Amino acid sequence: MKKDEAIDIVRPHLKQERLEHTLRVTDTAVQLAEKYDEDSEKIELAAILHDYAKYFPLEDMKQLIKENDPANDLLDYHHELWHGPAASVLVEQRHGITDKDIRNAIYYHTTGRADMSQMETILFVADYIEPGRSFPGVDDVRETAQTNLYRAAWMALRNTIQFLVGKHNTVYPDTFYAYNDLTKRLN
Ligand code: DGI
Ligand code: FE
Ligand code: FE
Ligand code: FE
Picture (tube, rainbow, N blue to C red):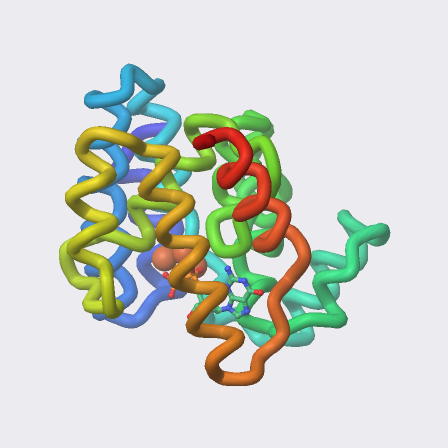
């Protein structure tokens, strides 16, 4: 699938600001793919499609997850976590994208997981550092991403966990697993 075709798929489902975020994530992810010698065409598609389901009705996301992924416990956690897994189902069902690398990058872009592939890690980091983001500490993560992709992912996970704990929110287990895995891998 070509870039423009993918953009046409998501455009009707995204607000203007979210489409702009998506395009910045795409540019950032492709830059990282080139730097780290990853498949930039696959990353580009994954990035364009990553927030496809962001504004889908909660019931629709629930349904997509239940039908295709009955074993997971995502539905017991914050609904913000549903749009990646839901999008990974939609791209296959509606648009015939069966590529597992692309679908996993979309699926795990919010939570992360243990043993993330380089492609998953690039999308995860690009979503966090795209130039429109202004999280506390994001500049450190941006700088680190230029030299150490996995350390940048670890920093983003650490910041997100601290943010969620600070708000007394739950943290989805895969986010902890991703953090723990990288903590071990980086030491
Ligand atoms: O969709 P985006 O806004 O581009 O970004 P995203 O898909 O990474 O969503 C991140 C939001 O999800 C972030 O504001 C924190 C929230 N969130 C809620 N629970 C969890 C969580 N993020 C992670 N990683 N883990 C959680 O358990
Ligand atoms: Fe997202
Ligand atoms: Fe993210
Ligand atoms: Fe995003």
